[in-house]
Length: 224
Image 1 (tube, rainbow, N blue to C red):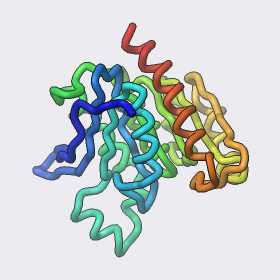
Image 2 (image 1 turned 45 degrees about the horizontal axis):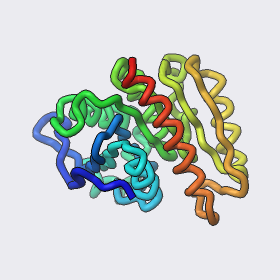
Image 3 (image 1 turned 180 degrees about the vertical axis):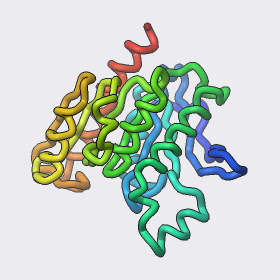
């Protein structure tokens, strides 16, 4: 496994003296950073996203897993369950994390990418548009890119949509969304997988495909 130069918890400012929590891992000679946007009801402690992040670290990619809600908002959302579906809010939090990454001394200057899961995929696509020039590519795992709505037509970053073969409804949603994205877009369907990729070997495929995609796109961006 790739030895990490740093790995630690930190706080990211989002304005008004508020912060969201994140976990940053930076391997030696990192050539990019991937910011994770979790799905509805999840957090930076998602075991699936943590696994994918570990695989990306082995590929010389730094990772930033963040909670998209503040601690106070999470308490509210546990009761109301509405903030987790506030896609514009989640997208703005990603933008704040992106701005932080561009100036943080450990990762400043590295090409930036997003990895979004479920509703986090829609937030990632919107944030990629809002952070134009900084975000080089987006990967979605079992995502709902369709929830990005009108923003899909503005996406200029290469986009990879990964869906389980047995997640038929979400496959259709991804196909519809992909047709609206003008940038390079690819759909990768994982055989035998359902929505959460809990079947043996399926999450490993997601991680491997994502790593290859990020390495290719971020190395290209770094060279440019």
